[in-house]
Figure 1 (cartoon, rainbow, N blue to C red):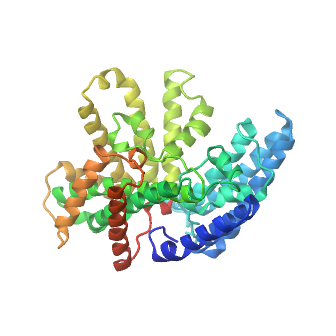
Figure 2 (cartoon, one colour):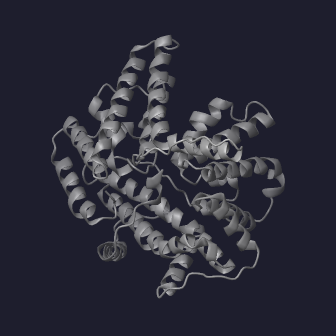
Figure 3 (cartoon, rainbow, N blue to C red):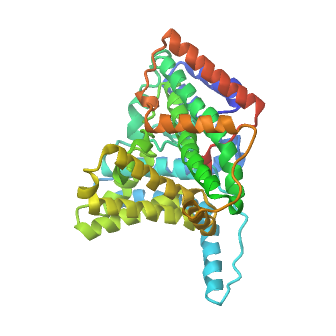
Length: 465
């Protein structure tokens, strides 16, 4: 089910909201949020709700085991290792089995001794990467003593299956919403109501009016990448750079708004990443929930920057390679992770020369560096990515986007450039309901709704991860 769909806006959400606030206590609300989460998830494919339920139950039992086991005991370590192994095994099977098989086939063929490895018919469960990170972060934090594992199965299942952030994040850690979950039985319906509606409307504008409009340029351009001209390639890549931001930021902003509607404060996931001045700054602003998880659960345990210069570079590269692989079972994603790891290392080397540059120059260079990376992120092969990058620097004749809506697309591109590089993000906006703001939100929601009604709802790009 999509946030930007009629069934969600006018059926699922009103029912979920009205029933939730009509329930008398925390247990009933936990149960209801769990049910709505499973209905929301099962709307896509009911078979995979059992997979999520299994992962939830394993992690819940492991949490209780950690709670009962003394610090430093072997049992405590086993309660951490076994469920993480189970979770990663499930993720690995569904997401990476065919990637491994295809790699073996390609390498063996290139070596002149082809191995007839089959391609299995495996359906990737939507959102599995996100809820797997939820359960793993919960168990690691419980093992470290950062949180006290909950004894309430329904509270934990609410955390894992919360529909607002279930299938595309943010990756919310239990400790970030634990207080709100504990107080869910006595939380006020009106406390964050206007703030929640405001956030949701802003996110809807980001997704429907911005990202989906840019998709009209980006999708046909990349589908016809061999025929693009230099100007067409630049437009396509620039369009995707803004489309990806507003698509994912839009989802995250709507998730925050939905969380407020149910009394739960979901943390910020995007902080104007195209305002970043350097690679380190970029990863403190882009997909904050993922980058902070990679930092806390991989980079720092590897040693962080404590083992000397070369060990720091190694840890950065390993962390970013894993981050690239997390995004997708493809070597283009792995290379994208390598590319950003290289940017982070180079910034550490040349920081004393980079930082004195004017802020505008730093922002421009970082934006251009991110844009190059997005070519590999969007392309389906290295051949495609390298071709697009080549024609961006070598004048090439060919086609470019031409459509009756060209003027609208270019206008949205300009708005996207201003909003992402100069304008306020959702957390920097004022969300009080003044008359002017109410009219603006109503107009924005109406425009978004008109597009939803007249066109097929577009899935969020991060659903594939």
